Length: 352
Ligand SMILES: *Cc1c(COP(=O)(O)O)cnc(C)c1O
Image (cartoon, rainbow, N blue to C red; front, side, top):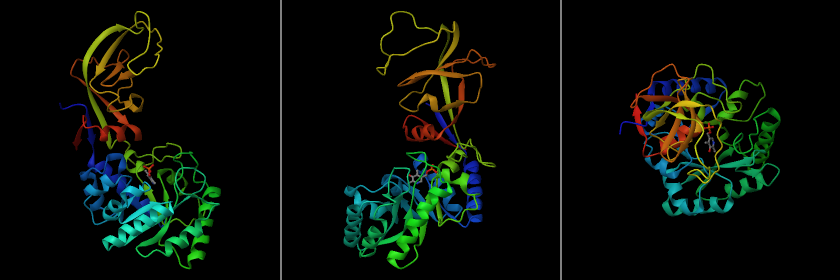
């Protein structure tokens, strides 16, 4: 099956990467390129390698294992205590917030004769991972300092993720405070203060002095968007990844189902608006691959009206194209759709 197909434009990704490197350099920051949204695709890894980016970061050990690079590998998701050995083996650095896990990493590293770097995560209000900034951050930092095979590389934070909290000066000041207290407690400067994600970009122009030395960036490179307000970043490509899906049925049908209505294929009670007879296309792609609401048709006359496991239904009545069975509809993508399409084994990945 040649479809459904995600096309991945190497040159556009390379240009996004190059532009981002330049912007961050101007602000004195280095970058961790985050690869989870495209499952650490080896072609894109090669582009990252060619630009000499210092860190490649992913949330899954399985992805880190496949990455061939001279850059330092970073595990983004807090390690599971059950995978301490794999983490030490596959990652040079990991983000952490639990002392018991950090001790397990230390034991694993000791038994393997290796050293492992950790970044201690501090939560400044977004309420995903990290030690709450009013808590015992410097106490934990001192405990890490005392370990033999784990090294405290820096402090990190994650915002605009769970809680949608923005990197405003007031919020960033909470991190700066934690950095100062940790540096005082351990009596040395930290090698890294890592911020991110792509939401940070909208705030870089703020003249506010910050302790960050590094940002972890994924979405802005893959989708050309900052994630605080969802704005397309000037000069970035938002079409590195595109989807093509083909039409397997094309018919005029009523828009309101006939007969008594119970549950749909997903156990929900659907509701419909009667728009009269419409021209409907069924696409050979479904929920198993992507959430239809995360697809943006290039043809503005196309509306996606529903989906089941293996079908998406498009209303093409308002299109100027006279589609035929076998024709292909093209879509721009969002973070959610790139993520699921790149993970679906049913979707062809085509490199251009
Ligand atoms: C995914 C992730 C990022 C990158 O986020 P983007 O919005 O893709 O830039 C940064 N940090 C952590 C901890 C992450 O899990």
